[in-house]
Length: 338
Image 1 (cartoon, rainbow, N blue to C red):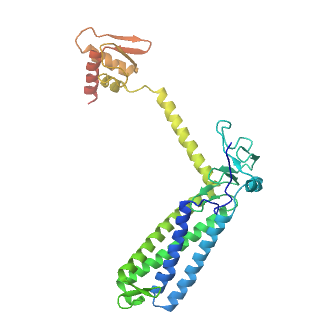
Image 2: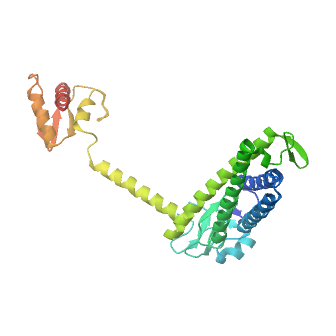
Image 3: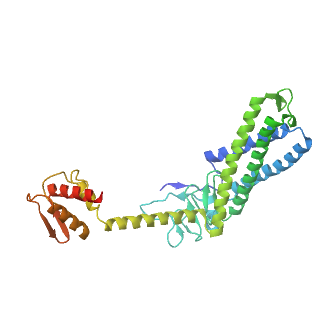
């Protein structure tokens, strides 16, 4: 049996690509804020205020990101075991579920808390499991959920502030450029002059990245606020949605199994193709269930056709129609409906 070690936290190797991307975004926004955005203002007071506010927000964002990544959210019953012993690979041939009805995890090989779930990515049981965050490369559970929500709030505020500063700079550049630190067509970046086009590209890209980040953070924050109000975790919400979809699908399947394969009109029209009966066109008699009203209309249509050996007889709730007469009956029904 293959046995795998569990991840301790978000710093455990290997890192997830989205985790690396998240740190690169933090680095990019921080560099642009301190080297491009704030130095672009001529007013020393404005620079000082922006340095204080944005430095505080960026600092808090980095700290809470590191805290949520570092916290081990595993179930206390398995915390010590996962650090010392590897886990067996789950065998679906032996067990139907990873966690049975007695709250015994067949991978961690221990009884766990009823709210704990086994995370496949981290290969451990997480207390009050909410979801596995790829951006942090760590599970979110009861131990780090509050820090996670705080981190999302700080990310949203920081991104909105950076986006606001970027947009203000773009507006000033087009309307009142004298407010900006602009010398003879050049901005200064780390002591090196840069052209207006380079400056505009950096500020515009910063506003775009920060707006996208703020939108994602706000959307995630609103979603989790709704979950908290309902007393649900992300895992419980997704499981409830799946059960509702399965119940709806089963109800539709049951309803369709009780109804005829298709209406009489469609059945008569499809005789040429054999779609309702899955047989090629032939002169043999076709049999299908129809309602009393439809049977009366078929009889009336058949009575209007010449007598050429057509048969219309009732056999245990079914009506038999020879192919030539069925086609004429179908035409009569279609003309009647139009």
